Image (cartoon, rainbow, N blue to C red):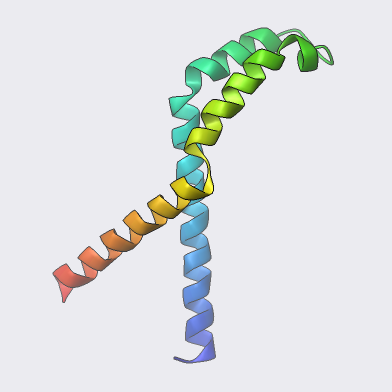
Length: 93
């Protein structure tokens, strides 16, 4: 495999990973939307005091988001993507 082809494939992989990260974040926000709303309600009209007034809501939101946005989740999404790609190649082949 030539250097240019390998560079293109790595670039595609980076683009795919960026897309998967974006999808992961969207899913996390969807799954945690109730907690995000609670945090938004708490922070409404506040400036600096949001740090201590909304600490519990922020903690709950972050814990929820972390369930859906961590390295394990990303690796699982990558595996699923690769399996889908392998399936497409097999179907064409």
